[in-house]
Every structure is written in C-alpha cells, then in structure tokens.
Image (cartoon, rainbow, N blue to C red; front, side, top):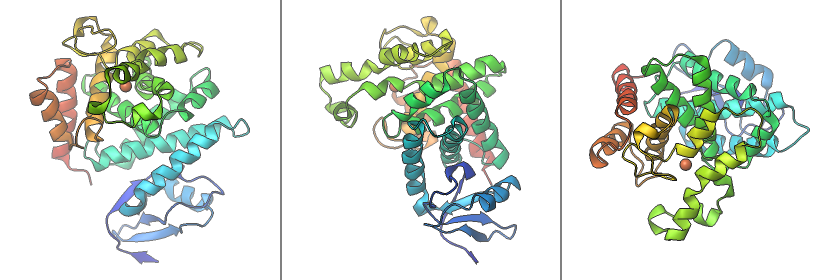
Length: 323
Ligand SMILES: [Fe+2]
C-alpha cells in the first residue's frame, strides 16, 4: 500500500519497541519516492519487519503531524523503562538511542545537520556508545529518567551540536569527544531537583528567589553526578559552567572565558543555541535567527572561536541542503 501523504519525517527504528503498539503509522520510502506502509498505528511493533527495513538502510518515516506524538510516546516509555530494574540495560540504552536519533533528526529537519542516514547514525551511535561505557550505567539511566519533560531530548540535541562544533574545530581525541558528549547530555541533570512550578514559569516572570533557585541546577547537577563512579572532572566542569559566558555575566560563578573549562565553552554555546531553537529564550528561532541573536542582539558574550565553529557548521548545512 503506498500513498503520497503530507510532509514525512524520518525516524529511528529504535523509537519502536518490540511488542509495544505502534504510536503512529510507520512508512519506508521506495526508490520511486513513494511511501510504503510497514506498520500500522495500534498494531504491536513488528520488530522483524521494522529492523529488516532499517538494516537495509532504508529510512523509516512517520507523518509530520504524528511526529510529536511518536516522540512523546517514546519519551514516556523511556522514562518508565529506565526506572524498572527488570528491563535489561541493553534495551534501556536502545531506548536512549532512539531519543538521540529523534533529537538529531529534528536537527536535520531544522537544517543544522546534513540529513543522511549515515550521518544521523554516526552521531547518535557515538552518543549511545558513550552512554554504554559509563561505569554506573544503571544509576545514570535512573538520573536521565528523572529529568523534567524535554530535558533528555534537549541534552541529546546539545550533545549532537557540541560534537559538530568539535568536528569543525578539528578536535579529534576520542576521550575529549566522550567527555563533551557526556557533559552535554547531562548538563541539566540538576533540573530534576527544581520544582515544576518554577520550571514551567516563563523566565521573565520568576522572582529573584525563584531565579536563584533555578540557577542552582548547575551546582545540584555536580552534586548528583559525584555519586557516580569515575565521572571525569571535565564532565563535572561542563555541568557547573554551562551557563557561564565569556564576559563574566553568567552563573553560578560569573567567571570569564579565560577561566572557563575549554569543553564547557563548547557545551555552553551549543546549549544556548539549542534553547533559542526551542523557545527556551523568547520565541522559537530558525538556526540563522539564533546565530544572529547570539552575535548581534547579545553582542557575542561567548567564546569567539567556538561561536565561529557553530556558525560554520550551520552555514555549511544551509548551503548543502539536505536531501
Ligand atoms: Fe542549564
């Protein structure tokens, strides 16, 4: 059965879990450009068909109008699953990987990342491998599961953008890239201790006390992660300093660029950029608008080299036009 529906969005096979009813109709794209229905909404996931399709590197798609529901369903499932001791670590990591894929596909959709199957898999594969290697993985998954609603997806997207910046800056050390990934993924882990009443309030409406409480998520994050074995000090520095900026107007310590951890400078820029793309600061902006806002409206209170790398990444994708 084929049809040529409205806008279709590429999704990862890891978004669908065996035996769990599909949260939307799932399609693959034929060489002719038509879409073939491979799984119907409400049916239990036919894992074999979906995985065979994905193994052949065929891309899976859902309708644009179903995309948010699919992501929300996966997020809810992931959150429930990571809390359950009877579910294997392998499956939990796969669910996390589905989240990484969908966050990166969203970046493809926004024209921040070039949209080839291999590119998405390369980025999400690196994130997945980095998470899998963490010593206290169950504790880490437990923390990820307790994050407020969009923070896990935001962490994934921030990790992907941070990796793209590193690539542009020719940072190739695997250990460094792993630290950046982990720091970016977990940078907002302290938000799990901030009450929803504060999180849900627009920033401009928060009282001074509420803002101070919110800003404490940086320190709280470091405290939470100190419970895990062998978390590198650079990762803790990323979490502590991801809201500092080059002109010493950030928090919690108002340190300037020169004193900031070099990896925190990268994640700080990626984090701010992703917040602008998802209405964390004012209206939701396009990548070009977000760059303009950071450079012109704010007057570039970020590390110049890191910002230039981000700009080069975005502009390169705008020219290449994903297809
Ligand atoms: Fe934050």
